Amino acid sequence: MDKAALLGSVVDHVKDLKGKTAEISKVLNTPTDTDEVTIEHLNEEEENKGCLLKASFCCDDRPELFSELQRGIKNLKLRVMGADITSLGGRIKGVFMLCPNENSANDVCMNSLKRSLRVVLSRIAISPSTSNYRIKSKRQRFFLPAHFS
Image (cartoon, rainbow, N blue to C red; front, side):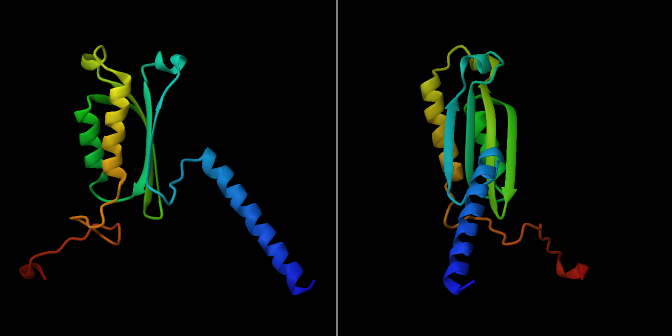
């Protein structure tokens, strides 16, 4: 086998692996390299189960992410009916099934709720260039006072 044929074989193999990876990532909830937010209104038969919205986001993993997410969902008066969260290589992807609280379910305009949820998740997902709290390693670090050494 000459060099050109070998190189062609390698290129074909890499293309095949990329295709397989794309297929797997459609089935599995794997984080991507880009920050993204999607909001979907679920169809009528799923709506009867109480879930109205499927919200997903992908962004850099950081310590304050879940507290921001919880605060945003609570402020919009939504309930989490289900969640699928995956973290890989410093990136995180979350998919949530959401519905309005019983108290606010009657006076909900779905379009305004979707817009508000998109704004909240976009603020969370857009990674700040400088965070107040950045740790390179995911391990918690504790520093003891000098008299404990």
